[in-house]
View: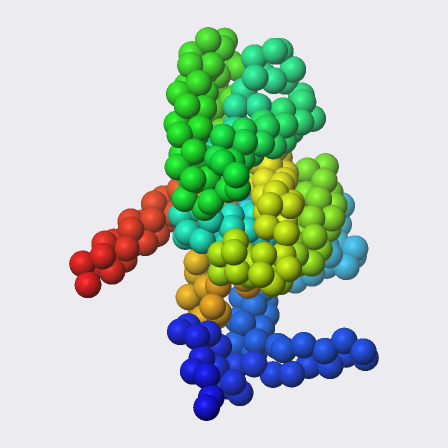
Length: 356
């Protein structure tokens, strides 16, 4: 007697295909692969188009000439030094935020299990504020403070939520409490600063790519290059833990070490983006769920989430640059508006399911 497939699982042979590369073999989810590649290509196309958008009014032919190195020095400076670094950061930063969100949602088994909700972005903002309050106003000091604040917040939430193990619901509840406390503390810190410091800190806290250059791109690229393989390597263990700790242990997965490693990886990715651009809300929350609904995989997957995250942030930054041109909005304001609508839709869906 054949066993019926799990609800929501990809069907065979419609979605899964066997793949063999040398001595390695596995199953390829065709739908997820197609969606990931398509969304990634759209994100790259939007990013390329964004290189021509701005007060200088460049054409795509001038953009191509600048990328080939055949344009005049002024055009090359605008495209390569100013706009390209911003676009690359938006693509990589959106991917990093989405991977962090996917890790948190898979571990907590809850679509609200995002670094935005659980308080790590708020903790990074706290670290940056404390550095500014100490009189260290350089970009490097702000980045280090934000990175340390995010990581320490993650350690605090994990420690407070640990009771002979960590459950997803406990992490979310503790994280929301820590986020509220840190939010109140951040407000108090802003009131104690000098006016110029407070304005600068509040602008950074809105999440903006306006001052992003290659100096901010390289640390993010290196961090993503180091952390993403760890997340992908532990992907099978993560999917086992989505079934519950007992099931995961029965499959040979050491639940707590794997969970702690993945949480640290997710926090590091979010903190790297926040350290450079400030807290950018809701990309980590929305991207994994959009990818889940598009690919129809049984659970949140990393690479589709990364593609959707890159698209969300590069589109959000393009809107921020153009909606009130020649002035520019912080991209965090745009993602907050879009994410707020998404959160209302998500909660309304929960309400409808509860009434059924």
